[in-house]
Length: 247
Image (cartoon, rainbow, N blue to C red; front, top):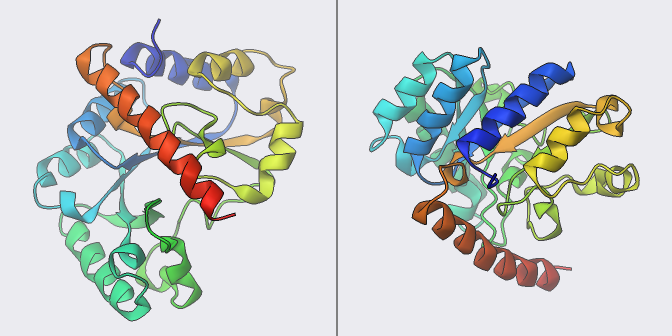
């Protein structure tokens, strides 16, 4: 079975629910919002509610998709990149964050936001909250800011793989990686995670899970799947260079 297909996602969801581990699913909608609706329906069919983070340029052209995802019982969040687009101007970034947040709230209720990695930018979008209070805007949860990673393991499919933290610029929890690696909590494929979830003695059972899924790369095997995998392979090479340059 090819990885990153609807069948594999169904197998992952089944393993998660059977494991008894507390987990939270979040979704960064970087591209292909239509894929988000497919994933949202797949989750809703088995009674799982998760959070979908949409970027500001998707609010108008994909408003119906956002509403449809919310109508399935999922939470809508803002996938923000304001500091990067404002080229480090904090006041301008905060103003645009507020405007975009209000625009998204015209489509669906929003009380959560998650930073876009913006790997080509020198600016980390989460740094905006070193100057402003995100919670004052009615945002109660920002995943990488408001999660206790001493008790929660972060897993993400960034880079079309589950060990993409090796090449990721920002979608990772640097402070915990040495600990997680030492415990054997590094997975390459979805099957690796399923096997761990199905093994009661595996150290993954010591943690809660925060799992970031990018719906753009979960699709039936075919030309689009191959194109996405090839694109991610190229992007991973570029990210390796960016990570090396910033050390």
